[in-house]
Length: 446
Image (cartoon, rainbow, N blue to C red; front, side):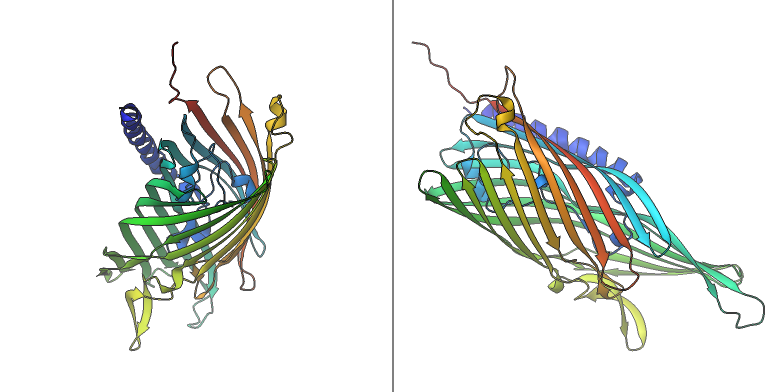
């Protein structure tokens, strides 16, 4: 009875947020879906940051983090730490500016994204629940390049123009439970529904109209259920120090859905023709392992480090391959490579026992390095280096004393290892609001 109204409210909240999310994604698709990166034309696009408001300023470290006032979906075991009297709702957005450079060509792009929306509360002692939405990846690009062809027929120099465009991405809806069966150990799981699609196209045209135009279109759709498992083990040293070890595991999964490839030729003399190829069982989600460690001293200092491995190399994905001297579109392996991510972050609270608001402002900083999962024309994709900083400002009024405004800034540099490859620099302003309300307090009249 105690939670019936909350569960009903969460269902309505999920429907409302889902509807808004769908509208946002439709609008974002028309605006490059939160991305303008040419690197998003490979695979499922650019993978999004998993961090939420509390850890964006710490470069996304989370696997060993436990706190009753945060929603840490990256390790579902953390839900068991939820405060029994509180309901949490967290939502975040990012504003980003991207500078792209390739040789003498420079471009600047602006985007805004809805990063996540999540809610959480406690079912009972040592048992917490969370529900949320977030984008997993984004695809959005539209660019072209023009080159000159040698005059091999004596009729003058000709030019060829290649145009590339694409949109789409993946999204995730999750529901998770965290349980603490024994005092130092917590376990948890997120059950996820992942959906999305992609549309890539490339067109080659020539200044000589008698030469046929070539267009290739790649499309696919994914709908799948997945699960994440998490574990956290806590150990206290004296009265002021606490260390938490966090582990996560997500099993890989084959996806029985189709991919489509259309190869079209258009000739001003002979007309047009097109070949369509469809492939079943085309996709696979990666197995993921994660490990993190955090140390907290006197509720004032927190230092954390995370390592994550996504085994993309063994995932199948449709691609053009050479077979028997012919180019065919088929299920392929080693289209991707394993992705490694290492992050470290620190948080400082001036005076956890102070009476003033400024005593409880959390100052954060972090650094992260990650290798790519996608390959660019068979070579390694762009590596990422990130620096971040931020602050959490308490919001105190007559309704709440634990709500927080999270403000973070991130600088990320991305570059492939090949000479002359495209360089991207991102500057992001991330805003997150964690709303905390005492909904489950029971009053007694004597």
